[in-house]
Image 1 (tube, one colour):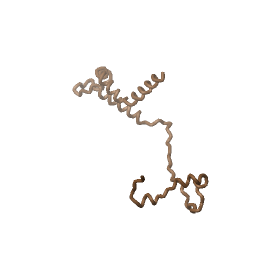
Image 2 (cartoon, one colour):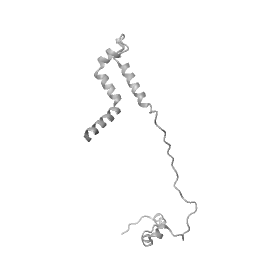
Image 3 (cartoon, helix red, strand yellow):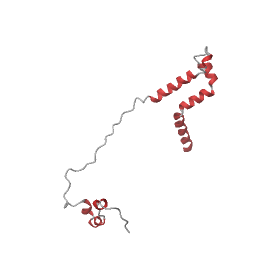
Image 4 (spheres, one colour):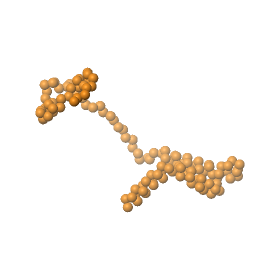
Length: 125
């Protein structure tokens, strides 16, 4: 049952995506019937319209309905905020959170950014 629903929804999405191509395909298949029923230039066969004006009207109408946004849509405004950084940093003697909770673990993870910037990379063996 779930596969049937998945196939059905996939078919609906594909029909919506390829709606204009399906209109052109329908025109090609039923060109003679469309010419007889809907052609505006029946009296002027030298124009070779063959219902192309009807197809153009249908495609224009489909494009207009696609381009119209639904009336109930609301515009959403996204704001990007800069990350918070305090203006005054804590003094060096101030205990940090890592030292406060796990002093032994904090000593194992020492990071010195100046050491990694000011010399060429080396292979640690």
